Length: 532
Image (cartoon, rainbow, N blue to C red; front, side, top):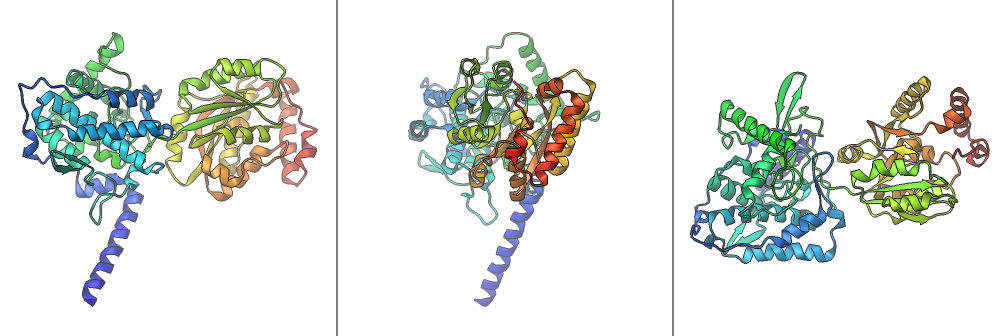
């Protein structure tokens, strides 16, 4: 008995060490050690009725996708708004899965079956995440049996024709071995940045072929599929893990890439009649860490991109000249919320903001108070505080979500450019960015963002009339990491242009030095007039 207990203890230590090893190296390392799942036919599911004309109703899943899938996303990587799913829609998804489980699928023809299994896998993956939301990574949903198992893929989640099935059963024992269609890897949903996208429509027997072609073309023509870097072709790991599915030879693989690349170019230059929008569906083992080998593309490697909703808070006071440009740059990014907090404007700021789709509320005057007021109305996972005269870059949200996949980072900021013509303004923008990168302290015109739960624990911005951004960042970096993004926001140079470049530089540094020396922000505010 003592020997057995000792062996169990040693196994536990080994397992804990392996999990630590996995978290450090990512899933790529483990897949390299243990290999991706092999196609292993389950003969029972080959049964079908070629003469059957029965149709399966996937309209509930189609409706759910159109409501909660952000597609097409500007980055090419579509997102599910998990945090926004209403209780009645969660119930509708469960009901759809129950309906699928009640069907005698063996009585349908092969085309209906193929669409059925793809939809079942995708809807089931979404349901698993919703059941554990919020969760940092799908790998952390540890419901699979086995000492070394992580994630939900081996858990028996559904019962079809009296057989209990897991996600791995559906993908590797049914879809892959029965249809022998490599494009299935572009169709099954894995909830990872590096994987192909979930489609905006449900699969049906009529559209499966076109959706598979669409998914393959979009993935191959996106950097997470294929990319040229330093003159070399770098490819997604799926083509290594599942090389037998793609033909088991370089020639067959190259033929596949060229075919899909040509198909995608046709779609880029003439109308395509595929059902639905968005880009390619998602796949599975790569969900355990993304599909690209380390260092291959700009997408973060080994991170899981569960959807993070971003609420944008914009404090305003008489900003009719600037707010339209800021909101026009912001809205295409599809924020979860845009909350404009007005501190008593007497111009058209409120009207313009509302016309451009923002929620406009009133708050006590003062930037810190207004931002805290807006944050109190926000429901997103991430809070982004944006000045009315600052414009975000096109990939701002992708960069934020990618950075915060690393749990070390509690928040962050962007590099900055100033929009004036004076040559010194470029230098000043670069100096602001570099100073912030070194000190991990940002100013408000760098678009500070933070996890909402962290912001709540901190109690928000300090209620001071000046330097609230610096005080906030200093407090934040004592709690954890601050991500310094290299993508740049563009902010107004009106203060520099009005007061003079050199005079403004000297004033800014003087105010900061006095603040660090202990002078009250109330006193400093007297020397910092608003420029609107």
